[in-house]
Length: 404
Image (cartoon, rainbow, N blue to C red; front, top):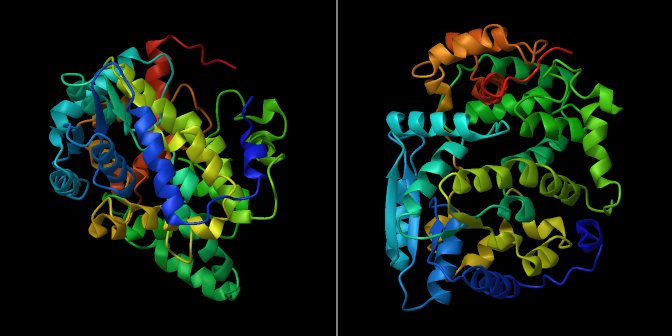
């Protein structure tokens, strides 16, 4: 009864940051309506900080509980930013330490309890946050949807950069790729080395293949599976994804990429992750950015309001002025990531060796080579190896028939 393609085709009503701020405040107010206590997950980034600040304004005089995760790996830890924001808006803030023991416990719970595999390692800290939150609240607000609606991912900038890159002489592109590929691998969080290697791997592909390669754990033709990796469905995975956009407007190419993520990555990964992670701890997650009024305002808005030059979430950042500190607005997006790259070479090494050296489920995928490259330090293949490992563990846990 609600068709995002029809909404995207409407005339835009997003005329100012003030309009957006008002709509967001009303959305948060609606999501805070509850017969039980409500809290907010916050990372210190723009999306969650804006939710926490909006909640504090809507519930003026009442104490809001906020929750953030602390990693011992300083390259991944952003808890200090979350603490600064929550101190500024005076919430009751709780910091959950995700050390190796806590992550291992969450890993065991997730792999034992879930009836389908989830390839996003962020489900582990999500579960740890929910586990702590249930001591104080029964509902939490979370920032899912903001990146897809407002253009928050660096891949959107990558598409703009790819247009300029393709204008370079072929020899210069080849030399640049050669230099990038020889950059030593890093296990840090969204490093420049990682971004550049992702970029050159797919920059010369057609836009849809390029986006799927950048955004997915593997390119659309890499994850060879036991049952043909999608060809049996007709047209393969690229055609399967492309058909999602057939009814959407074609006049704004960048918006089409945002809409694609809104239709695929958001419901198939992010919302599943936060739903499973919170429900495992018996609490409910709500996403104010996916309030109907917010979506109907933002979906049809032109992409230049969302990604302006090399500024992502441009109008959301303007709408946040006066609610969150400017230091938060100016910070580069990091996202909730887990130090999986190092974990696969340490605490999870025995499991990785057991399940990935000779995979049962994705027999045609280059899993042994990916693992060998990762162990040697030649490439950080954590984004590829993690979902494969989760799928293998799931297949064994539920005795899945892996024969064609």
